Image 1: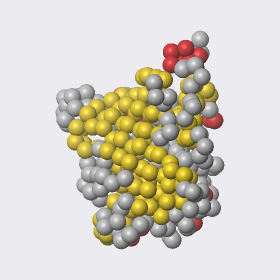
Image 2: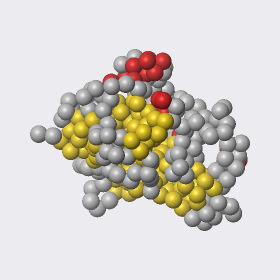
Image 3: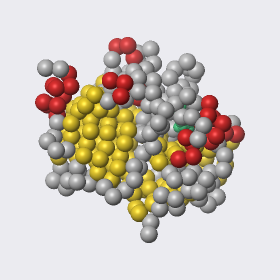
Image 4: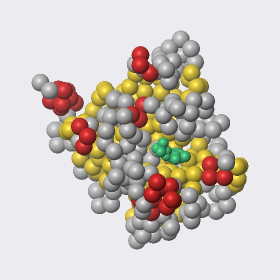
Length: 302
Ligand code: BG6
């Protein structure tokens, strides 16, 4: 029996979930139920697509992304852990931690009575990671696909000593035209502006996009709403276990310089990231866990 056949024998759900070989040989779970469709690769526990019935795709996945072991996937929902963005001390360590470019294991699947489909992926420490992260850990990402997409990252410390981390569910969203959207939910919230060297500023009104935008909004548990008059919809991003929201669009020059994005890619995407970053560092005592959750739903505009 091949590894793929074995996965399907143990975890496929008739008519709802199956495992297939995806681009780059990366195995992915294809989920399709009466409420929505989604694809999740075991590589990085990376949700790549999500589309509720009667809506356009919600997540943005770069047409130029690499699907290859060792490369991060551009788009969808990278799981960033155990550090957000650049490592605070080690410039050569991978951006956004290492688990987004590592294999995860399937630990459970379930067809739920409410019509949603669940997939749980797990990753525990391996000896070759101790260079980056010397602590024992167990991550579980529970993906629930229904009318909304629910992502729950459980970070468990099975070791003898506390550890402290940052991270994010780094969601990329499809928008009609980034020049025409706005994001509400962050009015009067302080943020660090990465574009101007981490200056501390305060948001006034909705977030609009006219240039490169890379902001770490501080001390906020608010739901954000992406208001999109072109795709005639609102995307709601609700969260828990997170006091940080990151908003990112690289704009024209940086987008063109990124081989896995391309010149105009920035126009149709925006990231609203459910994060633990900056001062929002999470310490997990031995035997304890922290849960980071994001709930993504779409509302059609008339
Ligand atoms: C965002 C950061 O979360 O991710 C940006 O705030 C960064 O600074 C972006 O450029 C993409 O990161 P990466 O490592 O996936 O290219």
